Amino acid sequence: MKTSSTFSILIWINASRAKNNVAEIFARVTVNQKRANISLKRKIDINFWDKNKSKAKGA
Image (cartoon, rainbow, N blue to C red; front, top):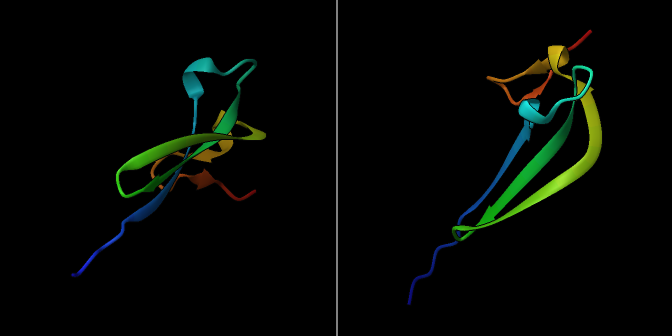
């Protein structure tokens, strides 16, 4: 019997809930189509977030 597992991680900021142009960073871990959203307890200025690459822009 052959089994396969899936795994992915998505990083994003919740810009709609940003205060003073600063938003929290979140991660979504997906394993076999089951999701868990996790707050990373870190904040970033939304101007330094690259939405296309899902990471902070360099200085």
